[in-house]
Every structure is written in structure tokens, then in C-alpha cells.
Length: 266
Image 1: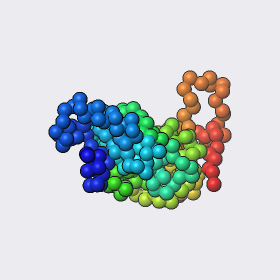
Image 2: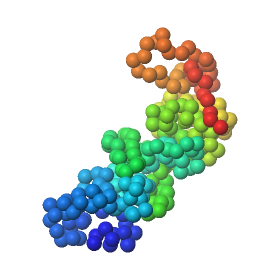
Image 3: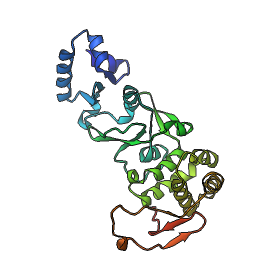
Image 4: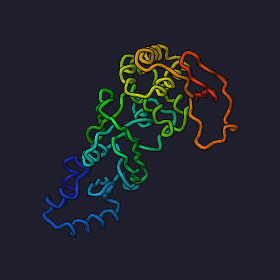
């Protein structure tokens, strides 16, 4: 049977067209068989025409870990990608709690995937090539996947704060991740990001005592971006101005307006 043949060769994924060709069958016959296997919990279809074999040890979870098939899935989608944000930080050893989403950045707006107990969440970046130097290949149980380096991860956390449970959680992650940052690589990658992202990251690195990385970011700002006053955290949209907390600090080094002091979990 196809599932056993692929599993024996170390593969967990296949496409509909590949299966039809290998089995020498029709589309309708294959789809009926695939639907039956999905009901049995032996097969998963996270995207139209793409299938993931569910090993017996992951049957109760409904799917293998997304790291086992994300590379093949994104090749099927024909999209550049990298595993990012809190999931990348976890891989780099900077996580204080379980990461609820398997977070991926790509250049197309894609809906979330619920794969068994896992959720694969996609975040949009228009120009992926601008950060290509920050994307690394990471070994997985079934092959490799693309992930953001520590420096790109730090920048992305401030580019997509809604994906990271807010600034206090970002600061908590950065307290650990900051130890792994290469200041030169960080400043190089920062040129692909908006000025407020760099200011917020620089202020937070300073706050956490990662002085060398902060100095390199400051050099990037003064050489290429310049600074204007920026909120550390943008207030929610459509909120009455009277309900927004007054500033508790105006940091002149980074031109950051702080309304709520950062709190870092130990």
C-alpha cells in the first residue's frame, strides 16, 4: 500500500497527483480511498491536493508535528517561507511557556491550518528576499525546514507583536534570545525593517542590558533611518484617547514613548 511504501522510505507526505500516478488509479477512486483513511485517522490533508501520513504514535494527536511536513507543504504551495516568531525563538532556546502556534512567515496571505492538536499560523511578509540572509536550514526528524536566525527572530517579534502575546512576553523571550544575537548580523538585517521596529527593539535590548546589540542598532538608525518619537506599544485602534494611559517615560536615546513599563518574567 502507498502509505506503507512511503513510510518505509522515510517519507510522510505526497500529493494527490503523485498518488494517482503511482497507484495507476482514477481521481475519484483515490479521493474515496483518501477520505476513508482520513476518517480512520491515518491521513491528513492540510491543503488541497497535499497529504500527510499520520504515524501510529501520533494518531491520538491527529497529526505529526508540523516541523515534520512544513518544508514539503510550502514546496507544494510554491512559496518561500521560514518558521518564525515564538516558534523560532523556542528552537533557539528562548521560551518560557509552551508555544501554542507553529508560526510561519511567507509572502502570501494563507489561512491557518488546524492539524490535529496543532495550529499552523501564517504571517505575511511582502519582500522575503530582503531577509534571505537571516534564514537558516534546521534539521528535523524527517529532513530540514527553514527558520529565522536569532537576529531575524528578534526583529520579527517587534514587527508582528500581535503574534507574540504582547510586549511583556516579547521582552521575556528577548531576555534569553538577546544573549545569542550577533550585533553585526542584527544591524545588517535591521535595514530591511521599519524604523519603529528598530527603535522598539533597540529600546528593549537596552532595557534588558544587551548593550552591544543595542549600540549596533543605534548605528543603523542614525546612518540610514533617523528617528522620530514612537510609541513603545501602539494603542488599540478605536480606543477613546481619554482611556489611554499617560506616558511614564520618554526615552530620549531611542525616542520611545513608554506608557506601561516592561515586565519581564523570570
